[in-house]
Length: 502
Image 1: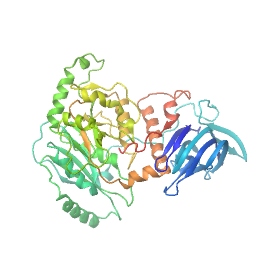
Image 2: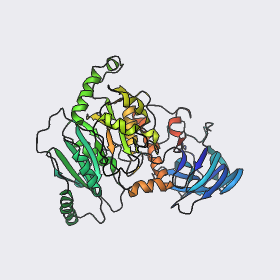
Image 3: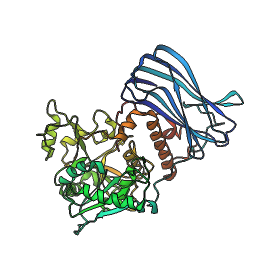
Image 4: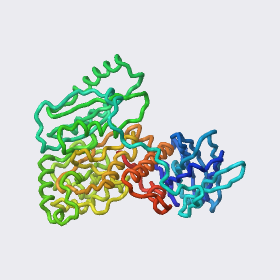
């Protein structure tokens, strides 16, 4: 593994390793690796740092402990480094999650021979190596245990934390697209700009954090506060607004829970899943249905093996952004011709969303093709970390967002993964788009970007989610290490500085 380090970006590889439940007797584990560095230098301004390995030991009861293995700064040839992880008494290890990489440093690092070795009675007796040659005596022959629970049905607890503020007061035609979105109350100005560009039904969920013990008087006071805050925006007659109050002080932003609530309360079956900091293209509803009609009459659709109409089609809306905040006299493009011209203009700061800092997140759209497209087209090369904004038909079979993903990182990616696994076809709309509105970086995204431990915890949820998908959709029995490679194989963050705001 090789990485070029930077002071403000986490570059890392991850590996999930299952451990047999009947493998016991180990009170300590030895972490080891071989490392070579070139001018590896720590930047004192970095709030946190990593040069080497961060490991999580996951226990059968769902708890975990972490340990850092630091390697030296400077320049040197391959050298062995070790660290000892002490396990709590009475705990049974079910898996390890390793993060190997760097953050808060400049220079270059190369790492090989990463290993986790059990220590029993003072002797190093076994090794779990992050390589393809597995030893069957202690690595599970079946899928590693799933500690992750899928999105549950709406609970009474969630219902108690909800408050219906507005419901649609006009009849909504079933053949209408509902904009489904969520935001925290402090982003209400962004919501206002979005709603100014949308002329159809909206299902909006706003989150109000809890800063104290949730009590009835406190909740009533918050309702008054929320109503006052919302006076600044015009709530359209077809808008459903629900408020979700935080359950405890300091809880992580429940982004996927909010999305699911918004979906459930959409007044129509056709929904546009969009984050609140995006402006949709003009005349979206009319343009969408024109594209749908064009798609189902196309030769590409008629010749496809699976003709599932709307229920299993995910229509992709290409996303764009201003790389730097635009001048006040620059407006959002109002036509595709204007948009393409703005993108291709020399020196333009308008480009596909996350084009530089997370290129994989929208790469399958194939923007050069989209610029010339007049008809819908399918995405044939789905890839990991794809997180498009979608128009879907809301059905009982449509996968919900997994609520184990909270705050920042991989929350929308996970939903796209399951849609793909569930057999959805991704079709790009040729005349619809969305433009991201610049805003201040949230505290949660900053923490995700600058805290290796937070990143590793997020990847743990992701690995467990993938494992759960394998069980839910019967994708593999994990009979061999090769069969479980999609779960235990390496994942790399080296080309991502902002992996999955969603």
